[in-house]
Length: 580
Ligand SMILES: Nc1ncnc2c1ncn2[C@@H]1O[C@H](COP(=O)(O)OP(=O)(O)OP(=O)(O)O)[C@@H](O)[C@H]1O
Image 1 (cartoon, rainbow, N blue to C red):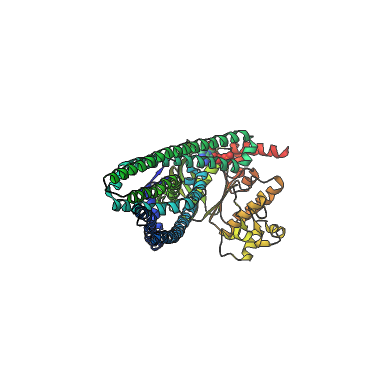
Image 2 (cartoon, rainbow, N blue to C red):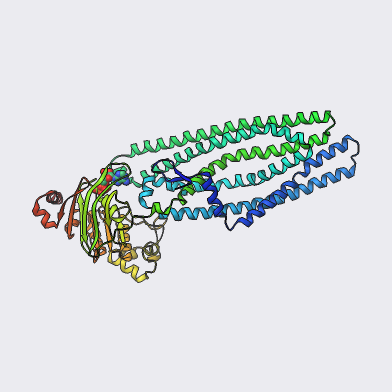
């Protein structure tokens, strides 16, 4: 990947300045005519703005030589009024056009970012942390959009004012331009120092914000676990530490800003002094008039105002650029990096085939070791084992969510996984179902709900399929959400269905209902069920037992009971537990 770097091994990439410039140029296609009009209007309105300093100098000289009359006053006043009106109108139009182009380009970038984020494989997002991606598509987009009102007027006006004012100063008397050129390096050094220091500080601030978002998202996502294990205090401390890191980085950023102010004040003082002394010497030698020196001072003031303003918005600009680099970092992740491993060629009689598969998360230890598994088409296999044995990881590797470390995985192209984390999208019940099958008719949607035992949901919701569910709508219970997911599975009609603890959350009254729903959803297709309740496993064609990342037993329920191994022991414990 070129033009981007990852802040840490697992972090999403961040584009460098060159890459960002290239991407912005590409996204500006379609707006270039508008940008050209911005440039022309900007130059013209800034040139018109030069009239007042020249008119004031002219007026002072007339007064000093006693040649000023009512005509001079009227001419100067009219020129200044005309310049103010034309300059203001031209500048306003320039800013409006520039702002429109800015937001149009940002909207295009945001669309690309969201489209890319939605196609990133889960393992890439998990490695980087969901918070990082969320922060880039929320905090960073906001930072870039919020920068517009402050940055656009200043950057557009300043850029043109600098060019035009410098030209005007040189045309007046070259020593003025030379005097300014001598002290200009102070501004340049201030700018260079800031450009060197600012992005680093702002990047660190944004990274700290990402880390904080990640901690908050994890605490909320794992709410049940946090409560279950009494981790509230620990999570609170973790979020506080992450928040404090944001505060420290924000303080650093504001310190850098204050140091910039000090440098700007020094530059301003030196520039004005240099031009004032030059004017004094030139007037003394008869090379300039008092009016000319006044015009020069006014031009320098005109120039310094925008230069200082530019420095102040560079602060916002740097922050926005750091965010822009992070946004573009996501959009430019190479497709090859994100493409899931294609499933190995498969034998139609064997829906799933794993050969000597190993897997570990990131640089962590292996959690799957030497897994060889064959699931004939149409067979329903249950995976059982202790917590942490690797069942969910195996399901993810089979589903293609995580590519295997070594070994090969073959699976049907059409595979659907249902995990405990079922997302109900904010929208109608119909929207939530047609995600899986956009062309499904209402009858088909109702039939899917009926098959998964969720037809009663339609009676509960007065608007039926048009009822709004999810955030801001009718809340669904966990069991209803699972039925919805199973109905989506039915509508997708995949060759392989993987149910990872899909019914484990259910209470005892719901579990029978969900077992039947899962049974109906799996009917007639190859299934892999990560079973926590052994009755679910017992109903499968075959059971594989996992221990410490390995498959240690495999067989039918009765065969494994007869073998008297780990499964038999688990079953006895389960039966004993049910009896109490
Ligand atoms: N995203 C992850 N990053 C790092 N380690 C992980 C991740 N997910 C799981 N693990 C680790 O991998 C090992 C296997 O976890 P896995 O969730 O696959 O087990 P499991 O048998 O499904 O457990 P459970 O029944 O508790 O869900 C565990 O040691 C777990 O801590």
